[in-house]
Image (cartoon, rainbow, N blue to C red; front, side, top):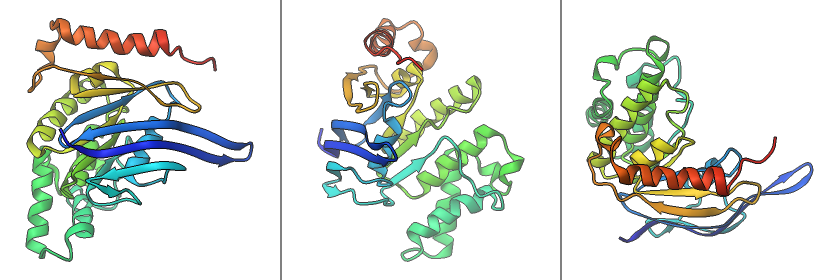
Length: 263
């Protein structure tokens, strides 16, 4: 597969009152178009920092970042971001929150009817057509997160970047949205890079799991290819020996080879 997102010899150093703080070092990662990648590791290992670098929200201290052969020099509509906090504007309806993103990207090339259709299609993709006129305070946490996903998808990004998007949700809602995300990724053929702390989530969703060493000066410790057929069904995987093998490999890395540092 061709390289689509390229991270080459990246280091990220922050200036602090105590001096330079090296968050990431020697990061090399190539991601193919349509691939689903998860980043996993203990708190403070730089997962979100790496995601922010790919999003263009921060610029690496050294190294190169490329998307579709072009330098990542800042945020761009080809890279949609979904945060753990849905970040919806409370005074706008679900439709208006998504439409705002659509306008930012397509106002110069599409008329109002086309942008309205694009907004409605994004909400339909996450199953929220019935809630398009509701305000954030009128819907559940899971629904808010779906609006955030719809907002990112409405821009038709080539890369979907997700920073623990289900971390604050209850287990049943989280499982439902994981299943929805797998369907959406298959339908849109988007490249997905997702930060998670959840080993089962990583194995269920990923084509490859990128395991980070502990910070500071964190780097990629190991990359695990998850060769489970798609579409994936969580109940069937519960008795799949390969699933448990992958799960065990990630747990071994995290809790035996990367012991959590003392507080």
